[in-house]
Length: 319
Image (cartoon, rainbow, N blue to C red; front, top):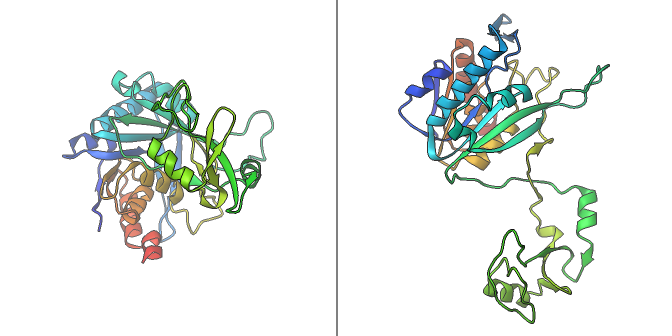
């Protein structure tokens, strides 16, 4: 069983933890100058505050948290910082240069459907997750299902095996590969695969010979789908109508953390979440057999997470 530690302490105190982590995910307050309410099991309400003296003070605090979290990463690790666009945009100039230089990408998460009450502006339905990479960390590509229109346009060729698309096996200027001649083809930038692999595909009738290039046949029934990019529009926020699933006002969906943890932390690895909230990170880590340390200053959150781990729906589904 994975080691899941739920600590009642501030995010700043993570600096005192005596270990490092393969993955840090943080979902801090967004500096919204408002109070959030959460309902207890007995019907009573508790609240936590997201008020700051100024937004500049908030950004300075957020930058300090990122600097501290970076120090808790292994020499090979990922850090995901979840905020709104303005918070993540402004914090970039405040964090340490070595972290800024390790910026990898910005993930735009479409957290909800269209806003129907917009009258004089654009609907705001996207969160920002800035991703930093240290060293050469673990990563597994995630895939989503092929769009039917895309599939119909891509897999237009057919043979006795089925419909297939074509993918070049020759190199490109930006990525030159092994140079050799094969059946009269001697591409300027070489081949992306070895001669042995070419011969293996050829024996299986998996090669298509074009005028200037050799292509590999990719059959539709063998496709893993589309690799996930940095626009995530297939994971929705937990709506207010789903009150049976929504135990915390800023609770994130399980699927969001499943994608991050499965792709960016190895099995038996360690995850750090310094803003535990509803415990989504702890629950997903437990179900995916990753170890996790999660922290929060709110005792109501600690109680909520402790109970949620005991009743983990993902663990029940796996048993």
